[in-house]
Length: 132
Image (cartoon, rainbow, N blue to C red):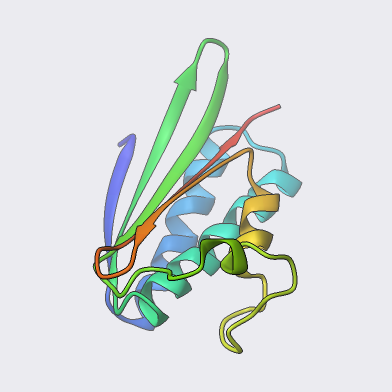
């Protein structure tokens, strides 16, 4: 399987996302360091989906681009959205919950980061990590 859809509605689902992402990262032959970075970032994003978005879903995909492989994970919720994207992406900013990594920390751990949000419309965050 090169794609997996995971509902995120409970704490156990955050654990499931971590397991699936680690499995895909191994299949993409990411280094142990890059596996850890990706798992850490996606764990934070899955937790945000549950805590701030009221639940949602994750899609984890194995990518192939020429000779390199990677993993893409997208997190979507129908929550309240992020009113101040600049603040949410500021290093060191925290709402007081989660791992304290925040969106800025997750962004630093991956190769590609995309945030799509609007107040009242929810949030989608997509991250990608490529093999070196």
